[in-house]
Amino acid sequence: MNAQTQRFTIDGDAGVLECALDLPDATLFPTPVGLALVGHPHPLYGGTMDNKVTQTLVRGFVALGYAAVRMNFRGVGSSAGQYDEGRGETDDMDKLLQHMQQRYPGLPLALAGFSFGSFVQAKLQQRLAARGAPPERMVLVGSAAGKWDMPDIPANTILIHGELDETIPLSDVLAWLRPQDIPVIVIPGADHFFHRKLQHIKRLMLEMWHRRPAAQI
Image (tube, rainbow, N blue to C red; front, side, top):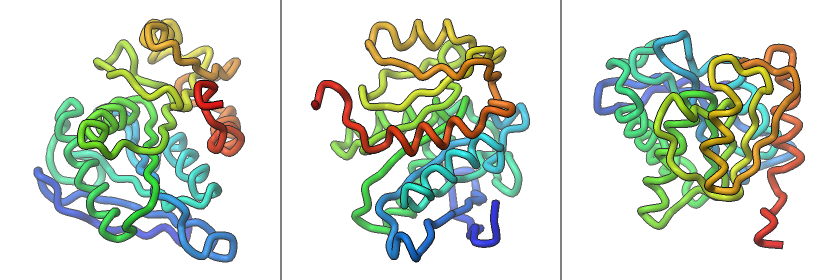
């Protein structure tokens, strides 16, 4: 991603996992203000941790002062194992979280994901909430509603979707969110990969991250 990106590996249940960490500008943030885990799109359709939407999410969190970490899911890049329909991937993301919390203890946690990565992060959020340690907030882009069984999500989640998403139709996302009464930001003219629309993702993150949901105002 850039010269400062730190590449490293951790051990997952299916073998080694390739990871990358980006830190905020130390002149602005001498220490990170939080920890963000970012999940990439589907491993069987070319998804990697270097996907452009995934990298845009990383850049957004770095600009907010977060240490942003991502991983190649099983079978991608140098990560061992095989695609596991979100189950093993959620376990692996949990292991990455534990590794990073040892490295940066006590930091607020954010979760973000694009497409299949949104499913993994929503499942991890559900797991963490059951432990009594939910993340402070999530950002989900191109949420995988209709493709996977997306769980309910917190009301303060930032959701961004493309109007012309041909992979995950906006109608499927609305059907998932309607019973939860959670809004989604729709980017006019954007396709699934936000071609020529990536700038909106980072801008919206920076504008909305510190806003409280209406129920808390």
